Length: 73
Image 1 (cartoon, helix red, strand yellow):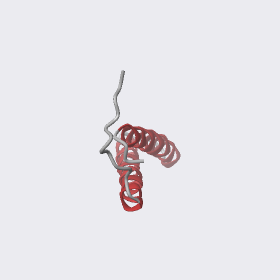
Image 2 (cartoon, helix red, strand yellow):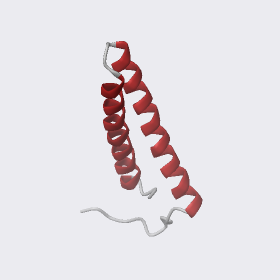
Image 3 (spheres, one colour):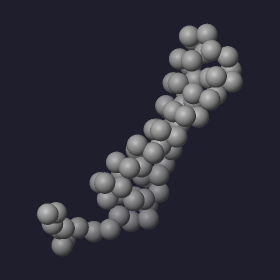
Image 4 (tube, helix red, strand yellow):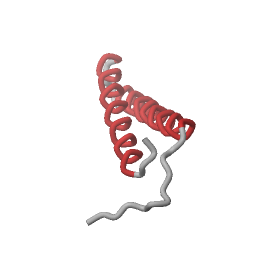
């Protein structure tokens, strides 16, 4: 059974915006790394773009889920 902290405050608007920016930037970094690795291994530009898109979505989702668990969103 989880107990809530009565002194815990809701995150401010600025904290929520910063959490979203961090999530998007993490997704962008994951996408760039995936694209560079795919192209380095001989993939076509379309394959690189598809891998980058999937990596962006996955990283964004994971970071946002972690931020929700931490109470930042």
